[in-house]
Length: 264
Image (tube, rainbow, N blue to C red; front, side, top):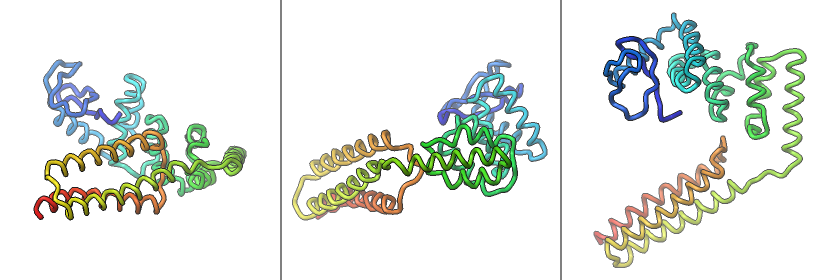
């Protein structure tokens, strides 16, 4: 959904789904030519009024029935930005995102700590409390205790314990971290070594550029395929973060070695 945004026709007030990068469009209702920027500005004005928040949420629900989830989801992102502490808005955004893992983490982080029962808590748990989201176990435990009560709370705490037991009983796949650690360390060494070669030895500038470009392409390709396979991880370790920063610094060092070698 990231390639779209929402807007409102300034002539007839029709809600519009705008494709990113599109400068102008024709309103399907009134047939007038309108600018995407102007349409977005009108929408921002409508959905920033706190006194009309309940009315706007109701409008979003009507749009979802009329057009499906894509247009109201984009509007909810605007509401979520303007009213970050409204749990109803946050839940609807999460729901229309298809309970996206990153949106789920954002929602739980913001609201699990508040002891306020909500009618949609079971829906969040039904869609979110699954083994793939095990990294959020502590947030889910907090959410269950603060958002549910009685038999419902007992049932979901039992399910959380079952998932934790199942995860603990099976060995965890650490290959994602292992391979990316090896990649960062080895590529950092290669990048630094290559920069030293460019500075010490007399290598033609064009050849240095081609070698560097080829190496960067290979490294970016490896990172792409790793992200494609393991990119749904919600968190990374401090070690991985430090190695990643080091690796990115060596990229700059390699490029600098090309130019410094040419000057020397």
